[in-house]
Amino acid sequence: MHRLATALFLSATVFLSAVHVRSYTHQFTDATNSVQVRWQTNRITVALSSSLSAPQSNIKAGSDVTGAARRALGRWERVANIRFIVTTSELQSVSAPGTRGDGVSLITVAHTSENTAPFSGTGVEMSGRTRIFSTVSGTITEADIVLNPTQSFSSDGTIGTYDLEATFTHEIGHLLGLEHSAVLGATMQPRQGKNGIYDLSSSSSRSLSDDDRAGVSAIYGARLGTGRRGAVAGTINFSSGAPVYGANVWAEEAATGRVSASNITLANGSYQIEGLLPGSYRIFAQSLGGIISASEIASQRGAYAGLAINPQLIFRTEEVGRVDVAAGSTTALNAQLSGSAASLNPSFIGINGQLSTIAVPLAPAHLYKIFIAGEGISANQFAKGGITSTSPFIVVDPASVADVDFGNGLSVVSFDVTVGPEAREGDYSLRLQSLTGEVAYVVGGLTINEAGTAANVGIEMLIDAIETSDTSIDDASNGG
Image (cartoon, rainbow, N blue to C red):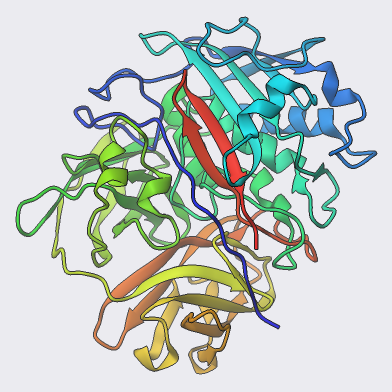
């Protein structure tokens, strides 16, 4: 039996207008996109509420709540030049919006009216929320994280619950100043998992992707000993001369096909991808609107606000160039796209007879049947070899491509994928090419990580939204 996970999308992200190019998708305070929201010290004090060690009716008994929070903090510490000073607090509730906060950056799971209020009347299922308080100069003075008291959580993959560590890891990314990524395998993509759908573990997003590492390193610097980094930057225009606004630009290692980092172009078409280790990369540009929509990147104000008001053209994906990146330098790469409208638009990916919008966790030395659905997706639209991976370690069997009936009016194909034993941890893309030569990608749609071998637990969608009372980040899911 085939199933489709669906979601009600909610987004009000805090990106501001485009003047100065910035890497990744970071939080900003002003309309010039020049004042970045960040901690001004690399030593960040976070308080764990006593509620984490007290029984909560929505958290499975025996779950390691405190351990999940500490491990999530540690994951970010290990990849960036930051250190969390972890304290404890008897405080139970997050600071109210519209105030200056209480100065305590609290992680809480308590069932108080203040903690329940942010999740009321939203119309979608929310798992957590991060509220950031910052000055006009962009300095974060407080950041509070709360889990939804009306949703279920566990640390052992119990079906129907959110994974505690994965949710904390995502929220801490927001606490540090990160917004969303359009790489499906990134922890900071707009959706995470709920155990019970997909027959795969939702714990894969506990682990940070290369894209997450690049994003946080661009703010605070890479952790010492992880190697000097370089960058790629430029401007992307259409052949008409108009700038390409809201394109997902990503870099893949030329040798392995691993997705290394990404950025969303600003209104002037500029992009900057930082945090790249020295080496050769392929750079691609793809419109938002397929698996990740523009509304999930856009904010109520700021650099990407226009994407929500006037969604951009769904244009054809193109490889914009190949570059060699050196440590400590930025390689310039400008590009011009045809701007032709796309007719090939993958919108779902899946496994085990189910479709969703979450990267599929894989393990080396295994064979899988993968599903892709969307506009223009049918077996007769692809020539032999029309569906491939961008990695030499992940091989698609061209003879296995076949149409599948999921109902719901969806166009779906399935195909067999073999992951070689030498495949490294990371996110990998699927490349689709129609008989007409049009190309589309599912960016980071296949993920291999330390949690990727866990199975028999499922994934629902988690959609993130950011409210701008101070700078407030919500996580939501409406699984089907």
